[in-house]
Length: 100
Image 1 (spheres, rainbow, N blue to C red):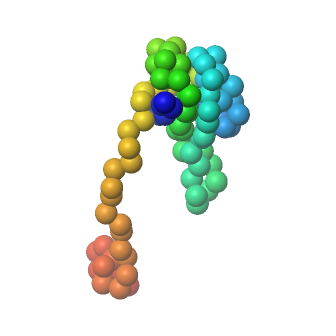
Image 2 (image 1 turned 90 degrees about the vertical axis):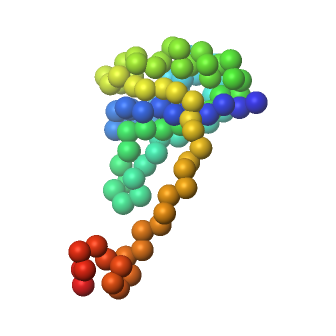
């Protein structure tokens, strides 16, 4: 079964391929994605790496959590499901501070 890891604290210049290549030292990576900001097109400084094997994912956590990656200390742990958040509705009178 595949296990997805959260990787935080990445340098903003990190690419998907660099993330994949770095984490492939721990095992076979099935996917690696750096999350990008929709508005600016720049990295948000975190991403996700998915391994085919739970053992490889656990090895990656041990190998990389708190270690240097591209000049920054990164955080690596098992990804948690996205929590449901309320949608912001800024129509008409719903604007904060009574905006126009």
